[in-house]
Picture 1 (cartoon, rainbow, N blue to C red):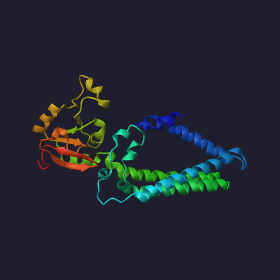
Picture 2: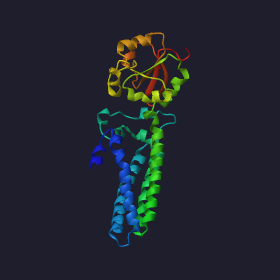
Picture 3: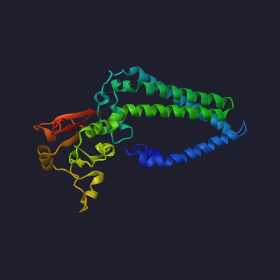
Picture 4: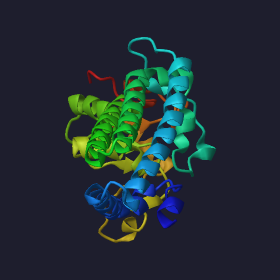
Length: 280
């Protein structure tokens, strides 16, 4: 119940992942016990019943997947996935709230992963039920293991497709091509929104935001580096001689209205704007 409850949190990985190894050991122990039991034992009967329930769930899940697959439309080559999504910030407090961002056009970018997941789920659960019904629980376990390998491969493929939304790596690469010592990278928002810039470039970031989030406490120490920029300090930086790279997820950042800016790169609904042309 505790794991199920916290699975609805937006930070579910902090609460549920530590429980996964223990749950895997419990399930593995029961499967081993079932495999060693006599053919007419209660564990064998429970295995057959649970495999039937799993197969029924898999059928329902596969039907939903096929409906989504049929309703989706392949996007044009080179389309930025971010342009196909719709934002629902009011739902992001719940687990999987970003799922509601998907549109039929956006789902089209995941057709291969979705089809693979449907096939893996249906075949794996179906073979598991068939083999357990025939009295081969160990072979049924193998079918489940292969099913999970297929599902995880599809999930990984979907994450690769979705990576421009989750990561700022393409933007970090664009910055590295033009960065010179002394240049400044500023995040228009919270640090965590663009933390991958710091990860991929190794360059400290400034934050155009009032002190908040995970950096707030450390910023109060007397020897803390300068991180947070005010509107006035940012205006001075932008108009000064130093090149400034601004990460933003806004089409027209209010901080730059009326100011000259140059687009260095765009990816995943995010942009890098600079106060100097790329050639300077």
